[in-house]
Image 1 (tube, rainbow, N blue to C red):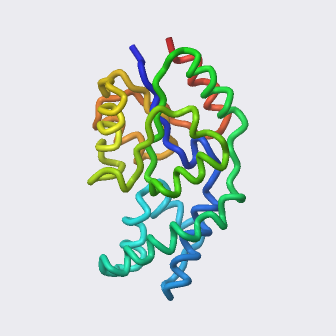
Image 2: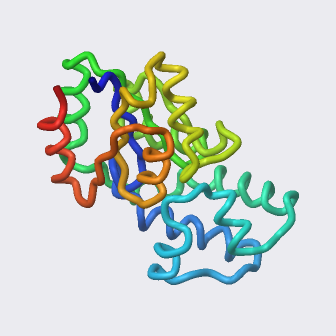
Length: 197
């Protein structure tokens, strides 16, 4: 029986691809590194932890990466207005809360950035727990974020439905022995309700 639904954020609750792409390149450019086009960004970086992405993109040491992360976090609010919340999200979340389901966000996005986004779009109130890329030792595709959310929600991984849009999300769900639904567009969110008890 499903007791909890764990949502990825980017690409599931919000359309933030352009925002993530632009902010990523903004940081790289500021620090004098090569930037990427959308095709390469989506293939190599989309859906992963930003710290991992900066390391792959720059091959820089930890001190430089941490400096880039601070700059990224400080400047991300400039890009928030480019984000769009998918139309069906508030209704889906309201229905799930009425069904007494425990809801969580499990996102590779940094905690400080995640909270700013959820507060800005008035979505934070729907979630019992938030687990972010910098909250665990091993972000997605490892299952650590799911285990951490389950611990905080007091549910077992097999009692959770993970909702994601990337292979990274699916791998994490499989490794945790949780159910998984792939969201390819905002209309897919409606289908989640029909799959719940």
